[in-house]
Image 1 (spheres, one colour):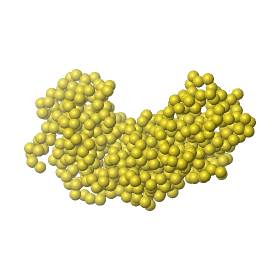
Image 2 (spheres, one colour; image 1 turned 90 degrees about the vertical axis):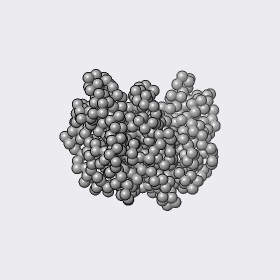
Image 3 (cartoon, chains in turn yellow, green; image 1 turned 45 degrees about the vertical axis):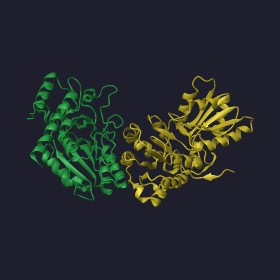
Image 4 (tube, chains in turn cyan, green; image 1 turned 120 degrees about the vertical axis):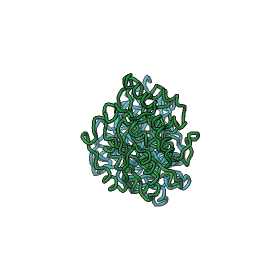
Length: 310
Length: 277
């Protein structure tokens, strides 16, 4: 049984850790501190915490100003607002001059299941990935969230990191060093490879158990660093495979599916993608209801594996 | 303030306007009007009020200047060149492919530029963040941020206005270039952002109104603001778009327009000869 952690809880605690070690770390919040868990940093370092009110545009440009005085600002909101509402502020004031601002998109994907389409961020990775100079990270579990958050204290340039509300089983070993761009082999396999990120990594591992019973050996790779990304490493992981599957809690346009499609162009292998079709989310009583309705379950991944290997 | 000092600054402002005209050149579009309307304020800041060092643009104790209305970049480029941040020759290359002087201020390209501005409404927020960051460090530098009256339609300006006041950013001074014209015509007709004094006071700012072309009034307002503690400062500068170039004054077509050869010569002759009337 895998250990379970809550990534946003881990993120909030880790912010306090790096706050102790790095006096230039500052944190901004748009009135969601008890959801994003920036509240821990507020308690620990009130003089380096900024409650910006429900004003994400100003928060984001304000963070640019803080970074121009040598601070390492972390802005916090739901992913849908962090990446969507403040897009122009991120583009103009942060990405063009490549400032050290960290945009943390919390409650990503369907994890805010009850609030419906307005609050479910399904296109944030795509729009952040399109920005020159931007680094885009999608941690797969608490361990990786901790390692990435720590790395962001020293990393150069703007970063977008998306974090789920959900508890997640550990899929990454503790303290795997963060290397921007590096895909992580989570499960070795010799027939088909699933490239996944975020919550979908643990669901892909469940799918691997399902297809193992049919004699299919499934390789699972965590592509948590969507940008930059080590294309050569990804190609090597495709080598010898009879099929490629991508799995993301995100629209199929512009995110992981698009990335892998770009990577395997010209390679003699067929690809299937699990992700959200070109539609918005909706409210549900549970996260699992949404995963089922939108085809993001381990069963769906297992089906895609069979298809890809045909 | 000695008369000689005022005269010195007025001469610099005239040189800056001449630089602006020469950057716009003949037959190329350029933001002449909004650059000239704020030229006197920019001159007062760079050549009298601000602590800064062209030899050391990254000096941590410097005062900062942000042009939130970034389309008026020409006035900042002229000031930076006149102050010695880079050779004046560089002005000729403005907006050329590969040039250090971009169409809007770009901090990675141009020594002395403090932020990337020009997507309107964002510069004041960046200025707020800078003021907050410097306060954490115990640095008493001031942040000067020029905004436009058309720019006031951007909601983010008012988010920043609230934040500056909520955080009591009293090292932040904003100068509003109230030239009364936006790209499509008079602000009052197109999208009326008035009343201004009442709005900024209601948002918690210390507000004064001045003639933005009266060098003595500009300096007095900047200096008087230093004594105001606990709140951000707004200097509403009543200005004339295209100021100093008679045929362009209060003419919306020079917001981002072209000069023909005759206009160019006229402007250069006026400014070069030291006459501005």
